[in-house]
Length: 554
Image (cartoon, rainbow, N blue to C red; front, side):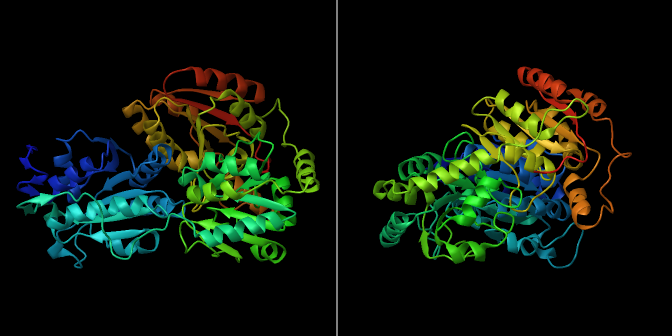
C-alpha cells in the first residue's frame, strides 16, 4: 500500500514517483472528481490516487469517462478530468475526446502508456494515442521524464481552460509513473511561449461594429456556444435589451436567452424555428457571437453574407470566417467584447423590423397536439419544461430527441447540454451524471431515444453505485428515428438498419434490475402525470414514453 505524505518545505516536495506527482498536481488544481476506468498501464497512478481525497468515479466504458467529465465541466465551469489505461482503454476514449473538442469543452485527459522503452514495438495494449488524437485535441503530451510532470500538468490545465477551451491529453508511460524524482515544485503559473490568448477586443474593431449596428435596418444577433463558455449570458441579455436587436441561437447557444423572452426567436438551422431562419435570411446585419455556424446551423452561409454585413466575435481567431465571410472580425473574449459594445450601443432598430420579427414569431407557434394513443414528444417536452425548476439542467442525446428538446425546452436559468458539434449518440446519460455531480442541488434530466439509450445504458451501474439522482426519459419509437426520417424523405422509405423493434429490452424491467424505479407512459396525459411524480421523487428514475415512429423531428 502506498503511503502518501512527503515532506514539503516552502512548496518544494521531497522524493516522489511520477504517479505521486500526478496526483499531487491534480490536488494543486483543486480537482475533486475524476472519471475513469483503470488498467495495468495506469495502475501506479491509481495506487497513489487511493491515498488522495480526490474521488474517482468508475465508469462502465471509457468513452463515457470523457462525457461525464464534459457534463461536469460544462455545469461547474471547471476543467473536467478523465483517466484511462493504454491501448483499447485510450482508443475507446477517442470519441469522447473528439466530442469535447468539437464543443470546446475544457478537459484534461490522462492515459496510461506502455513502458517507454517498448514504444513503437506494437506490444500488448500499445496504441499511439497522442498521434491518434492529434486532430481533435488542443494540445497533447507524451511524457518522457517524470520531472516534467509538474510543468506539463500546469500547462495542460492552463491550455484547456483559456482561449477557446478544449481537451488536452497527457500520455504517461508506466515507467515514468514509477520514476522517482528527487525534488519537484508545482509552478505558480504556466508560461508558454507563443500561447497568449487575446481577451479584449480591439477598440477600433469595436468602434466599427457599433457604427455598422447603427446603420443597420434589419439586424439580428446569433448566439453560439462561445457565449455560454464565456459565461456571458448576463452580458448578452444586457446588450440585446439595450440595442433592441432580436436574438437567435445555434444549438450550442440555446439557453443564452430564455425562450419566452420577447427578443428571442429560437434555434436557427435545418432543424431550427422558421421565425429564426426567416429573420436571419432577411437581415442586413448579422452579429455572430461565439458561433461557428456550421452547416447544420446555416446551410448556405454565402447567401447570408451576400445580403448582410457580418460581425463575428470569437476568442479563437481560427474560428472567425471559417464558415461565413466576415466584414468586421473581433478577436476576444465574448464577455469582454459584449461589455464594450453595450457601453456604446443605442437602440436604433427600426420599429418596422421589430414588428416584422414579432409577426414571424407569432406566425409559427410550437407544433404538436396531445395524443391519447401515443406520447406526442414535442408537447411532452413543453409540459416537462413547465414542470422543471428554473435552474434545472436538461441533457439531450442525439437524434430526434435532441431536436424535440432543442425546439421545445425553455431554458430559463439552467442549462441545455448536448453534443452539438460531433453529434455523439450516447452522450446524455454520462453527461447528466457529470452535471449532477457538479450541481448536486439542481434537477438534472436526460432525454434519450431508445437507440441512444442503448449506447450508454451500461452507465446505469455508475449512477446506482454513486447514488446519482438523475432522471432519464426514453422516447421509445422502436427506430433510429432521425436516420429513418432521412430514409423516408430521401430514399423512398427503404429502411435499412434503422429498425430496433424486435430487439429491444423491456426498459422498465431493465431499470428495475438495477434497482431503479421506472414507469411506462402510453399517452401524453400519462406521461405528464408520471413526469410530475418522477420529479418529486428522490433517486434515479426512468420514464419510458411510447412515441409514434411517424412523428417528425420538427
